[in-house]
Length: 109
Figure (tube, helix red, strand yellow):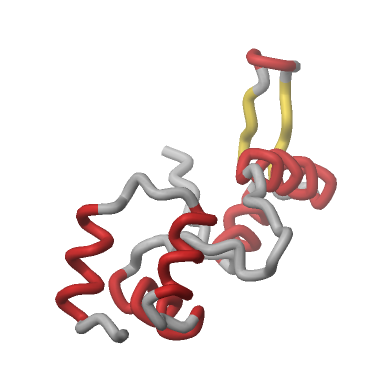
């Protein structure tokens, strides 16, 4: 069984609360391949509810963000001041240029 574009879109509107595992199971059951589902999501700029590989779990994006901040500080792109909840980060001139390459535009004023 294949869903039309409209049916697929309607299903996602009505079932936004499903877990990743429920989503994957349903897509398999109704004959939507992982590639078709990924294309559908990319086309609409919507996050895809899939782990992509069996046994993989979603990651904590804040861990990546924190790690990237530390990397940027080591590169001299940002300056870290303070500790814990009182930590502030300031971008350097070099950092502004380098971060743009990652699609990150820092407004310093």
